[in-house]
Amino acid sequence: MACMKLKQLEQCLQTVDDFSNPKVKHEQYMTPSHIASHLLYTIQTQHGDLEQKLVLDLGSGSGMLSLGAALLGADYVIGVEIDPDAIENFRSNCEEFEVENVDCVQADVLRLGETYGQRTFDTVLLNPPFGTKQNSGIDMAFLRVALDLSRGAVYSLHKTSTR
Image (tube, rainbow, N blue to C red; front, side, top):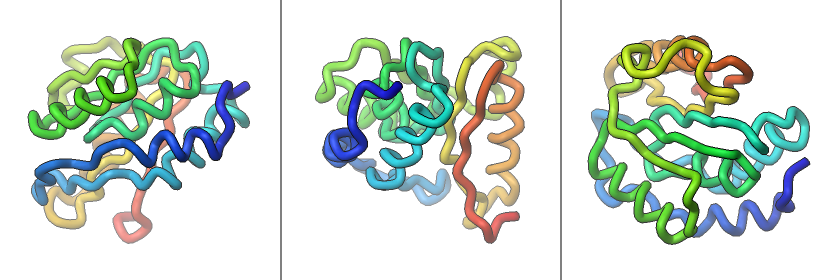
């Protein structure tokens, strides 16, 4: 069961700093705290897929989903992000939240199979680039990676227009 109330989680996530230099080519935008908190709270309270789990956050950006997972009791969270500026934001947010069980690695999500073995993570979270600006279908490519790396659950946000 989640160790934090939904309202408290949302209030905490409202303090996550956004991208300092968002890049259009990566379709960078921060998941709103309202959406992130409700999504993560439901993942934990309805499915138990965060507390005491090894969690992977693909295309983690500034760390909204990673930090929320940690606040809801994940044992360890790894965020994966390709952009060094976003990683700086991510790490700064981790320092502000004083979490020690969250790390961010710089990597191309589409090449993670070369780094991690299949079925390594209990839960995989992703709010991928949708492929609306360029790279049509990239959201589905991220999802395929997530499915390969998860031994449990995958939770992914998608835009209906990219179906």
